[in-house]
Length: 503
Image 1 (cartoon, rainbow, N blue to C red):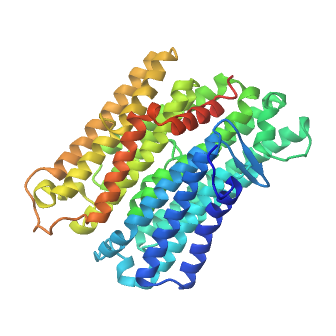
Image 2: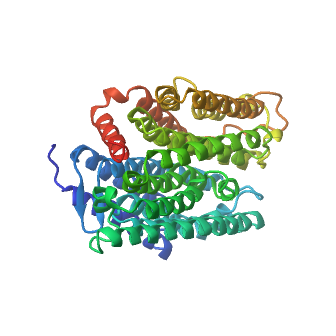
Image 3: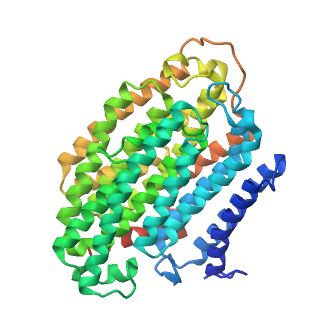
């Protein structure tokens, strides 16, 4: 273990306290103007450095349990993804807000006093997501997930337009139904614990996972069904996905990136913790059938909506559904290779999708439309933006050499190795449909004859560097993971934790 001037516990305290402190100061108006932007960057960067230190210090095959905080390889992998998106948010936010002047889609720049409130809510949103992956208790996880819903709903409605308010209302209503079902599942899980283990360490997932086989099978199955539907709603699995396209489309682009890249995988993380606890009691077949069916059904439902789509952010939202469906199906295979690939896919999807939402928001502001049919000739008018947009599209579709290519390849390989080749063929066909639909729209936007007066390059140097870094980091994690000793070990151990109930 390498030496450090801070212990892991101290670093975790720092990670949890700093975003909260910044949120309070930003909301109070303590920071203004340029100081606010630099404080935003400094906060996220310091948190990311602390998480990086934890990754280097923490033995991947161990766990840390202090008070209500629990850390193992799986939660640390999630924390690493959140910290990367946190840094990307902080270093792109000023450029986005400076450009947010369009009379139809802009809002924040016309009311600069709201910038502090926007930053406060965004940092609070990231803080609640960090709580989700660091608490040790299924009940506290539910509370943290509910907190993410309440805070992110305020961000979805932040522009205070009719459509954004409608999207926020729909988001709260649908997710509240889901979260109520998840609460019922959590209560049933507690009842199962009371019947065989007593009330000591109530809903502590490490304690429950250790005694998972002792839980009554019937009650465990009912509890898991409620947890699956409840958290599946938050993930955006079909047919409980109704909130996702509207919320992703109407939220500020920076928030859309965090919703897609971070929030949905936090809900998936909680569902995985439930799987680890309940799998020994309910059996692999029960859980596998749910994950495979709803995972592939989600991809199948997204395909036609992408093909006929006109709204660029809704197209990206349906692309998110495709990727969450693939992750769910990958975990449902219960193979070490597929579990590791699904966790890697979480990272790759988060990085590339944040870059895509940022680029989409920038394009919408400049072209004053969300309608992809009205955007043409980007390669002639803004070649740098067009290049990175096309590169990110290629990345999210899983074409080589982008990082998602490797995680998708290993996921599909899992179908054939797991004795379900016909499901692998079906998944391939559905992914091909997504590829054709998204590539068609992207090429129409990048190519063709421009229909508007050139406004110059859309991206500045700093946000170009951040977008490039997101794409490069994704590629490095995908292609060179075996060479990244510590990270490969962390990911392998995280996959082993997910597979614990099977072993």
